[in-house]
Length: 401
Ligand SMILES: [Zn+2]
Image (cartoon, rainbow, N blue to C red; front, side):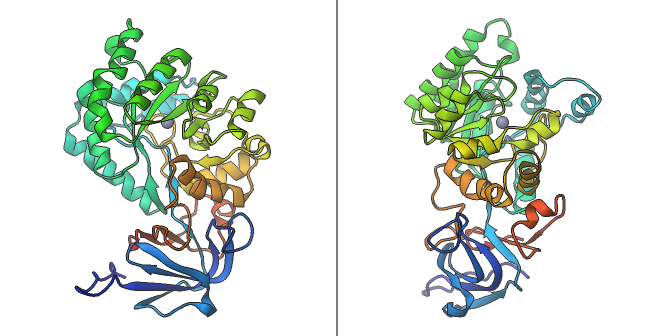
């Protein structure tokens, strides 16, 4: 099937009826059963880029075009709220060494920094487009993208400029690690990140992030960086508590960050702080998988009442996967999530982490981001790990796959 025809001039956008959906996950409890708002034997009507109608197939209105879902399962397109996709080169050798017994540290990021600085704009753009297509074919229709492999004013600004031409969810991560030129002067690097580099990057970014970790930035440095970003209108999100216990989660909650990401090493106080706040706990099981590390405990966070998102952390060093389905399967097997919770975290949870209400749901008015599975149920995302289950993908109403 080719792309949908363009709307005719003088007429409203064409409408599409997707019918005979065996199981529809809406993530709107008002539309169906349970927290996922599941509607059996469902239909969806798309008008232009938006959802116009959701309900039982038997009650569906007529539309210009019709797509038969053949009783397969549909859910919102995945919202990947944490990815690092503007880079060059890869780190196969480092991964191979790690799987042969070496430990992961934050320092490997510098390998990618050198390759990224040496790449042309066109090479970085082509790499990014390749990864976005790869993700889209696996059902991911919203992707957040961070800088952080440039670590100079010009290289960070160009990473965000390139990312911003493909997604509105761009994150300034000049504070990924201390740039190699500042190895003996980390305070000088923080001054750069909160000064000239921020000035150059803020016009291209929506979010500001910092890797708050031993070997990267401590709590005081992270606070200075996030506060400076917030003063320029960027909303904080934090790489927090990944490799060790630390101040990242508490800082994220205190500063009203949209998300605290990783959350692998949490005290009871950290869990309580997340549960009592609007800061989403974004879990990134690809990182623990790829570093043979202990997984975060999603069950503990969910039982405490925290909002949990799942994301890929796609990057060439510690999590080189763009597969949200893989993250769902690992989260169910290793992190105590039910399949329903994991699917919710990978869709509505990611939307919460990006403070978006138009994605991660299938409800009238939302963007028509739809994933049809080659399966009768969304549970198959965890039940059939590693199997390509994408049957069709629409993004903003356009058939993409
Ligand atoms: Zn990350």
